[in-house]
Amino acid sequence: MLKEGELRIPFGCAISGIIDKKGKRFSGEEIIKSIALMHERSNGLGGGFAAYGIYPQYKKLYAFHIFYDNLSIKTQLEDFLTKHFEIESAGNIPTKSVPNIKAQPLIWRYFVYPRIYMSKEEVIDENEFTSRCVIKINKEYKGAYIFSSGKILGAFKAVDCAWKIPYKYSGLAGRSAPFYNA
Image (cartoon, rainbow, N blue to C red; front, side):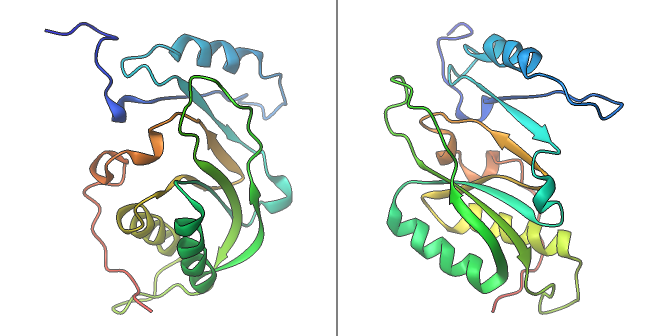
């Protein structure tokens, strides 16, 4: 039997979060310590963090953080995004190269608002519509992966296989809903 650390489990990635219950700002020192502790977790792929309140200028928009394998899939997915969302702003997420990450993905951030909130069967609210779009993208657009999709929050983690996690391990499995197919 393999021991902890001898086997990489792609869906065993680590994310850490921290919050001040009074809503006060604080340094990132504690979260950095937390990430450091997760560096050699069961899958050996390191850790990341989730942050809330980081995009106050876009507080009514969804922040999509997306890994792309290449420019071709980025172009395909941007066609879908443009059809279903108003894109207020888009750009790459600044990163620092790390020698251990060999196949670094293209990492982009979009601030979006849904254009339509309908499925063929019903009118749905913007949160449900957005969730269904994220599920559709992560399931059907091979080579693209939305790893964070909330309002005024974001998850940050860069490892060389995180965007290739199988759909059933993405945290969205078991969710079946009709999707508006325009």
